[in-house]
Length: 184
Image (cartoon, rainbow, N blue to C red; front, side):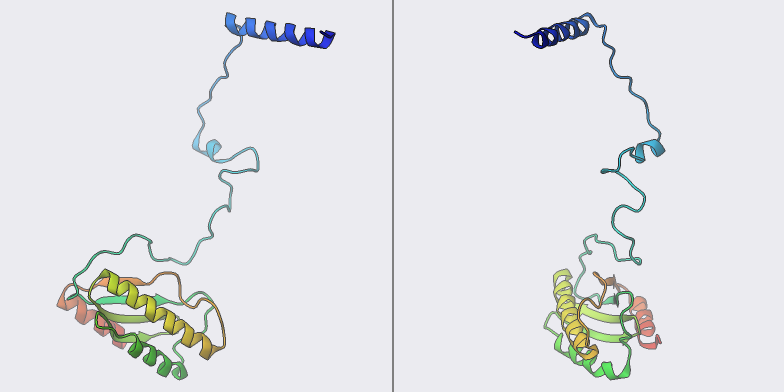
C-alpha cells in the first residue's frame, strides 16, 4: 500500500468516526419566501422572467365543450389570426357562401352568418357536441383552403379554437340573430 492510499484510509476512518459520534452537523434548512423560491441562482431550469409560452390574444379555453341537445342552436365565433387579411371583402363573399353550402350535412348546418374583417359570426344547428365539432372542423378546413387560394397565401388563417355559445331560450336566439345579422 502506498502512502497516498494510507492517508485516504485514515481520512475515511476519521470522517466515519465523526459521523458515528455525531460531530458532523446536518445542513440547516431555511424557509424560503415566495420571491426567493421563484428566482433560481443558476441559469438552468426553473422560473425565469419571460420563460414559457408567449401570451396570445384572449384565446378560447381548452376545457371540454359542454353537451347540448340538438334542439338548441349555437352562436359560433371564428377569429382570424393577428395580421391576417380582411376576410370581409366583397369579392370573397361568393367563396364563403359556397363553403357554407358545402358544409351542410344531415346533422350540421349553418343557418345564418356574418363576415367581419377579422372574425366570422355563425348561427349553427348541430345534432350534438360531436356533430358540432366535426361540422366546424370541416367548415374551417374548406374555408381556409378556399380563402388562402383566393388571397394567394398559405398557412393558418383562424385561431386555434372557435368560441361557441349554446342558445337555450327563444330570447337568446332572437337577440343573437339580431346581433349576427345587423352587426357591421
